[in-house]
Image (cartoon, rainbow over all chains, first blue to last red; front, side, top):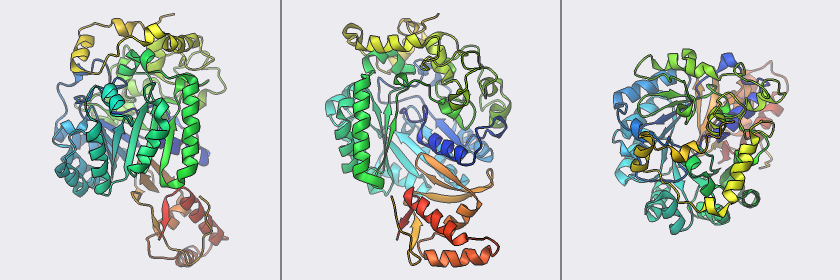
Length: 409
Length: 93
């Protein structure tokens, strides 16, 4: 799983633009799960330090949904209007039934996307995906250098990724590259874009790391400087002018350096629905970090209930849950108070304003995090990679590294 | 990207884009990696006819016949082609 759908992703921007065009703001009564993300497994051969999967993912690797349960889920979601399907993880290719899922998705009329590290993508499988009607494959790339790729993923996957990229192109798929940006590769943006062009990429998403799950644990080590981000954006704009429409480049701005929070997931329970490996239904990737929430599961009452009636999906819909400064803020509809998970992870209160907002009484926590990342002692602490062993530690309650972010007021 | 739409031009949907009717939304949509656009009635009628064979002129003629009461329809159609090309939803054949 990469970092693609956090915050204002591309589909959200389109939807947003569309809402503006129609002159209709997101409306509580018109929510529709247009985007279904199927996190089919949390198993993954890579160990990326920036992964936003839950640090306790190990406990969700048991009890994965069966093929039949996934197919039923796809049917239910499609009936409710879901149209974009992301098949993600973990590494989805660790399941041997992705072919069946792809065939069903095509039959139902989804536009389907396999979000992969490329590990496990063979000629045989890609051919089956093509025949089954998979619409595109999004490949995660990490850097132009073998050193950084292998370091940040804690694997030797550099050569493999290049091979897989060529295979994706060879099968006539649009080449969609997702590059998570952090301190270790932000200085290579120009070279990364040139590599993407050389590989024949049609879309490139430069996703600045957002800090959830493993990336939150490693925040001080991953966060680049504001100046580096500005420079990266400048280079990206220059590159866009050069390539024009041939290659679409998206630069996902990191929220820590903005004045206002992102409209996370385009609003809680507005357009996104995530079904996780064990069947939990979530309004966002990291919602399970929130306290006192019971998320619906597809094995129980199904998706229609989850989306429309479940207390979890209704809890942060709209603005009724807000308190000050959000509730009286003239800009509240722009960002709906930002991200609930970020608010909780950083302030200990899920209903507070996202501390990224400069109007938040907790905004100093963001400033402190930025300061920390510049502190050579903190920043040189070892990175904790996303491994089963480390995850088991978190499950067992070794939360030392996590609790330091619960800077309770 | 700017383009001067000519009646003799032929367009097709861009590679990797899909056009379909969405029952749940009661509208046509264009789907592509990471995104979708919902097309309002008129826009849907134009894109529906973009098939890599019909010229812009053919499509204008057809729509004028299909919607005889619509005034100034030709300018709207050309405008739709300009926008769709600018957004890279369609490609010139």
